[in-house]
Amino acid sequence: MTTRLKRGFWKWSLLALALTGCGGVMGDEAEDEALLTLEGTLRASSTFDLGNSDRIRASLLWDVWPKVVVDCMVNRTYPEGIARCQRLAPKSSYHHPDADVRVNGHFPNTFSMSLNRLPDPAALIGEEGSKLGMAYVMAYVDGNGNGTLDRVSNEATSSPDIIVGFQSGFSMEATEQSFILYREGALHPLYRINFPNCAEIPQGYSVVTLHYTESGEECSVKTRRVDLDMDLEANQAFQQLACQEPNAQVLLDTVRASTVGPPPVGSTQRCGTFIYSISRNDQVLYVNPHPERFCSVANTEVYMLKDYWDGTWDDRASPPSWWPCPVVTTP
Image (cartoon, rainbow, N blue to C red; front, side):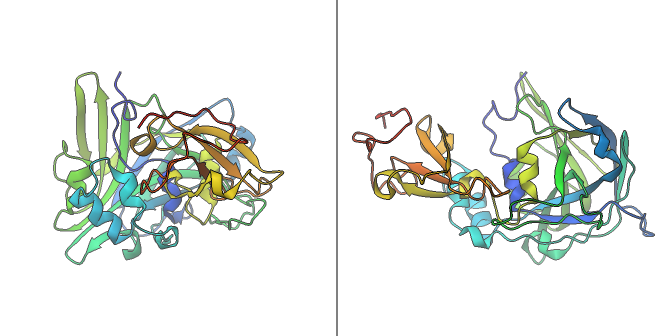
C-alpha cells in the first residue's frame, strides 16, 4: 500500500504538533449543542501501561504557523517544500495558543468527544474574512490531577503530565489520515495547497480524511459526527508534546561542526539524516548537551558539515578528525 510518507507528502507532521497550543480538556459535558462529535476506539499497544487509564484525559491540539511561513507555503516560494518556509520565522515566533475548546468523553476502551465551542481566534491562521484552523486529538495522563495539560520549559527535568496517545493515522504504515479543520469565511488558499484532491470544506468544523492507495489518493469530508480512533503507546515523540518550546526537527538549532569543535563531555550523540528535501541522505550529528532534561528534542543541536540552508560553507571534503558520522561528498 502507498503511505503518506512513502509518497513524499509534506502535510503537517507529528513533530510539528509540538508547535501547537492545547485546547480544552476532557471534563464535564458542556451545555451548548455539539458542533462536532468524534467517536472511536482506544487502541493500546504492548508498551502502554493500562494501569494509568483512570487518569487519562484528552486535548485538542491546533497547528499555528507565523504569517511569513503561511505566505511562503501559499506562494510556493521554495519548490523543495515546507522546510525552507518554516525556517523563515524564528523559533520564538511559533506561539502556543490555548484554544478554548471543551471536549467530553469516556475511557478506557472507547471515547466520545464533543466540540461545543468555537476555536479561540489565536488558534486560526489567516486574515479577517478568511481563516483556517487544523487540529488533532491527543491523550495524556493527568499526573498531578489538576484537570489540564501542563506544558514544561526546556530546563525542566520532568513533566507532571505524560502524553500517551495520538489520533490514529500518523505511523509510517498508515494508509488513512484525518485532519480536524475549522473554516471561517472564504476558503483559505492553504487548504488547497494541503488538500488539492478534496472537496471544499463547509463553514465551521469538519474532518478531512485522506485514503492512500496504490493508485493514488482518495479524500472524504465529514461533519457533525465522525469516527476517529486513537493509539495509546509509550512513545517519546508523543511525550515531547508536553514541552512549551517548539521541537520540530526543522527548527532545531544548527551549528558548523568544524567551528564549534567536539560535543561537550556528557552529551548524548547520534548520527542520522536531517531533512531529505534539504540534505538528502547526508549524515549529521545530533547532540543533546543536557540529557538530564525532559525536553530532549528542544535541547538538541544539529552539528553539520555543510550549510544546507544558505550554502555558504561545505566541510565534507575535510571533516574534523573527531567527526563520528559517515561522510559523503556528492552534491
